Length: 347
Length: 281
Image 1 (cartoon, rainbow over the protein chains, first blue to last red):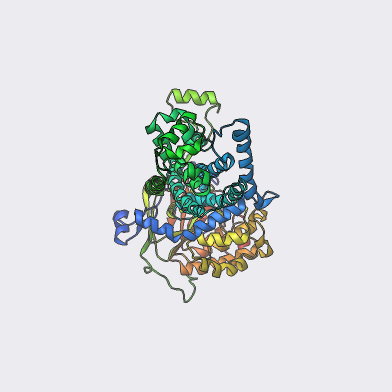
Image 2 (cartoon, chains in turn brown, purple):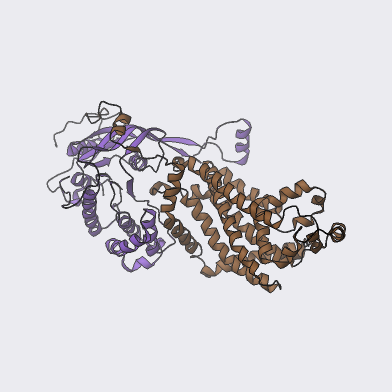
């Protein structure tokens, strides 16, 4: 071997090919695609069908849960207080919003038990907000993982929503304590919080998948996302009751649109489940009474009387909208994400 | 395939059938933030008005028209200088990087044991082992069953209870290799997975590769350690700037040609298994 002739170039030079590119007879004559078909080889970056993809996801369910739990544990390892931050974060959030919207700017507008009302809204919206923002960055953030291991990519946005859900469970315990502390009674209605959260989680997964694909293309979208979400928050009745906005009173269609927007739907489902004062004041929850409704219309501040007005969206309809949004988001988001499955690895 | 471990079963196909077909493969990376303009908001705004494409976006053609057919039982070494596209080629075969043009056909899911098999640095070794197993598609029970052997093989000892960010490069690599090799794969690709291990671990992992090769139908190996290539592979592909310079079954000849072209001395082969004589450390 040692006597081999140097074919071209000196040592260390590769500016022109040292040896002509050489197939050395290893390529067969027939087109490679036909050869692959004959031996039933499949493209390595092939995308399975929608149902096949769902099956793959189901097979990796343990990975998704493990990934979410691990990320959750890892989140506070550098902090001295460690996992205590899971409780402290929602508590501090509640304190800040109460300071601003409860004390400095008085937006209570006659909403009974405003603190409980406000914090419920913030915690529920925060779940969707965080899920949206993290999902829109999940592909860019996880490129090393995507380029290292083959797995259905939808695991990642789903895992991220699961992380937020696990955080939310902690927030919910804090919330329950605050709500009971404000004098709201503990009733069987509280159990409705569970299906409400599940529907919201499904909605978040669907939207998370949708946003993950949008965010995978360019980072600009991830930068824009916090602003979009914040605008959404201020129009979803997180810090105020949609029923108290005087601008909306003469505009039933607009009120209707405000009430059926998914964030408002999930927030109100939760409020009606755990806050008796809200349940009692929900428009349409009492038989129509012109005199009492007029009292609400005139004064505008006496929210309890709004129960005697015609409801724009009844409580039962609220559940239908909640389920509808969840299914719609899941189907659209899942298909949209799946369509680009093979393209996520590219930077 | 002289070292095919006895008693191993090859799950699919027989020797000589193609398992991987790479058909005119092109892979392009899009790199954002590569230099170009002054990078201020004002220049960015001007660009938007003039409807110019972002100059910061560069396209890097990492693989430029590569075709080859790999048969069952082949162990292919891939050699080439840094940045010649070796790792990219493996990622494309594994289906992790989408091709820009052309196609890769495989008989099954190809598993890639890479240096950057991403694990979570903030988590303990234990959690990483379990998570890695689940990511490879094991059930929780299988992950539990393989746990002890993975930890034993990695030899990280008590460090398994520490977060992975406290590991040395070599230790992290050992743990990654141990996790990735816990499962047997039909097509196995090893990308510099052993570069930073100590001598003891290199010997151990060489044995492991040989036995994995027995179980897997086809093995790809990227290494700068040419002794490792010669002792493990029956075929070699030499890549340069995303193109195949030479390929074939005459491994020593191609390795020598590669060494000459890159300015190294031809390898002495008096003691072929001796890692001390490798061209690159």
